[in-house]
Image (cartoon, rainbow, N blue to C red; front, side):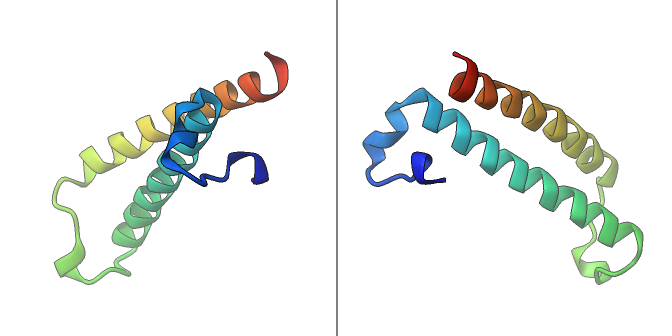
Length: 82
């Protein structure tokens, strides 16, 4: 992670760093959405925290997993192959 530390906002001008951080951020949000769904379906979350449109959340999490995987391949390509 030393290569992708952001010292200044100008560091995000490098597309390799930008793609890497986008991959990390989207992956984190997607994993949290998946965890939320699992906790809700097992009634671990209180009723007040349940998402009414849980099917849409599942679809968004599924799409997020695919986009994160594609960004992972893109990150690998730009850092190690290109």
